[in-house]
Image (cartoon, rainbow, N blue to C red):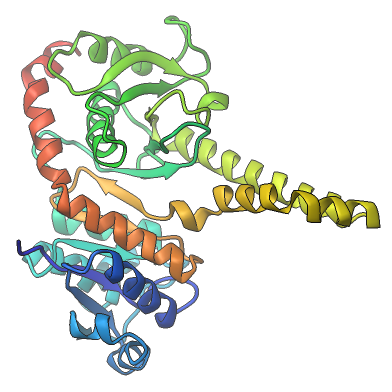
Length: 346
């Protein structure tokens, strides 16, 4: 089976070309049927590839020296979409030279370029940024939107739920993922008018491959009781930052506690297996790879400061979504819902 290539923006991110190439090489070892289009400075990429003959044999380099800055405004970056490594990686998907693009660069610029180049799928009004978060359950939870759309109406939220459920079926294997809307309470009368309308539409919809049962509060996101959490981008981004901050707080608190005295240091040695497991579970590199859902193509955003292992996880997310044909799953689910029923219920 011939699979589409994955385009890698080798110049994006905070760390540089070496980490992006090391990460792609690690991902290639897990998904050896894929080939890659490495976009960026050819000399630097070629040097980094010397350590990875397996990746070198499966890759083509598209030379580009222009890079989108980390603090560059999306409108400015759009003007250079045809000359920057990020823009060329996304445009490779548009032309069909690649099936997915992976970048660790400027999130706003990547979203703007992706939306302009790839457009949204039929029936989808806006793309959403979705990511995997760790839970106490057997599976990670998918949360969207995480910042692409600060204001959303009920129609957007319903579409996000459908896209998130399709993504969840790939990563969890559940035929009917548990989907909830993020709200300030679980009672039916809680929340904005848009949330209540979206909840009513999802309850009334038939033929959707999901299990919808209302709302979830932010403190339950990581309990393992839900597979997909749907929100507008404003609330979702705040919730995500709060979760990440709490994880760093716990990690720093434990570090300070274990170094406060000799007795604490001995206690650390005794409990080290447990603390190492906690560290692994909270490490964002192990859940790296946010996806822009709803586009005519796969685009994955890696953390700018991701390690090679984190980059590998982002690339493997792209590979898996191509293997499982995520866009076709979303299209089928939108067809099952029926645009007329969505319009009629507004």
